[in-house]
Length: 225
Image 1: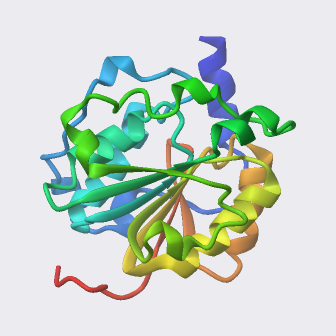
Image 2 (image 1 turned 90 degrees about the horizontal axis):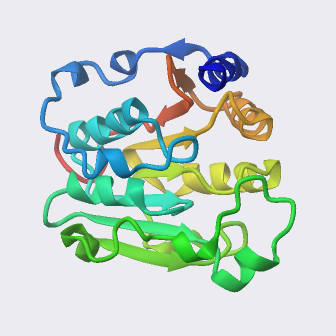
């Protein structure tokens, strides 16, 4: 239990206001159709917590997201669940560093074994709605990923330079009415610092009881909701 209490203490850092998800998405509490795939297979301590995952899946449902970008594939657990909730016409684009870059990079606090990247969705029915991308998010033009997107989840490198660059790109490549989530806000100092700086110019809030920060872009986007 000590690790759990340590995490809760870490979540109390950061300068963002902490709000309930319903304050950003009024009526989302009526969401009852989110599907969770393979909940017991998640990597504890590295994947999204289940209540964090449910928040993101409900937002995807609520906003009728169809085109999603995830920065940081890890084992593919989040991509699998996003794909399960987007419908047949949806697509999840998930980006990770190429294997040779994963092995060469030093000092990245959450770099993973390249052999596990996407392992949770390989061979699953939802895999046909998942597009694995390889590249460095700080040097690649995000238009090559297929922007704009309805929902973007930033959960890649937690190094300040990466988070700052990913955040700026996410704001640029999200659709009007779309949503940007950051994971591990409040737990990793560099993540908190980069998001807090962006929040000077954009209405970003932390979701109470989670390590999620959230920005909802103004407007309704391309779809009528």
